[in-house]
Length: 428
Image (cartoon, rainbow, N blue to C red; front, side, top):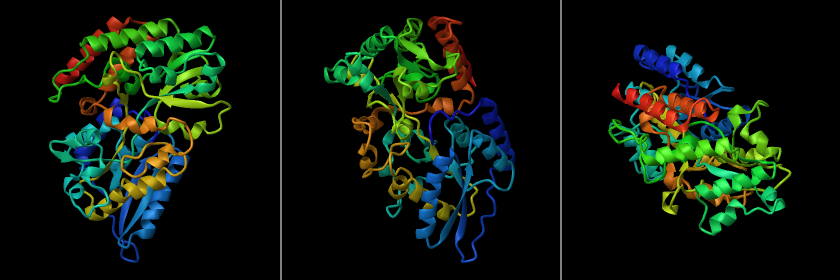
């Protein structure tokens, strides 16, 4: 999946009420004429993404002697609505991509199959050892592993290397090589671009960039028991102040406030913006740029040991009430294992594999320092489980940040309002 598909809170609440009524019943999968078990697999995406997913499904169907998968592709932006509609009927999928903000609630409603036994089977095409530890923990609820990553997207900063060279500015890679790629360096580079009548760093407001500004690898956003948060920490305060000050000075530009309606990628592609923060989803779109670009890790706050990045990673889940669990796992382990990931990410791809042996997919072609995508996986910040289990909390937090970004409140006010939203949610 690509970036930022965040589930609206009313949809999440609606989904759970439906699940409570229907139990997420799977359709009567039945069999094909030649006796194969049939599996319904649902996923959303662009036409190009669905084409890649279909390739993996076709490859599985060709090699499987006992199972046949039907892809239910949902183009456009109504994937969650489609899932909700399916769950109301007898046509619920056997397996499907679970959006970040709904995954926790699906677990709370006990409608997902426990995959632990399958992952511990030595004969499985996908085993526990194939899943990065931070993702494995993120997909574990009440000692049950209920999801596996289809892939992941550790985020890095893309920058226009030719623009830095043309303006005779120190590039992010030069800062990095000097051991000085910190928040101050990002600000300095952005200010230099601004002073040259360019857009420095383009900021988009969702959990990935926001929490990257507010937290470091040595700090927890929420406690393990989900009863307290780090939103009152000095680091969160300083990070939000840093973001506010750079927006005010125009070193950073908030894409959501542009009257032109342009997005971070269009500003970058046109040569107007020098830097943006994103996952590998832009690599395929940036193959025909008129300039050379490269990537660099997200900067650290005080010390290199604090460096981290945000990493969207959508899980594949299995309907607990599927009638053919073994057949569904046969497909899921193929699709999310080495074979399926390789097929889906052939060429430049739009994500990063989570299984070993596929690094060449990331390192072939552009950008020059693509290794940074791979390096970022182990210290990446994944979507907070606390927010996954509290629908609407992420939206409440990012809405307060947006008010700050457009000048409706200060960072101090935004942080206080974030804390109010968090503390109210954690009481429930």
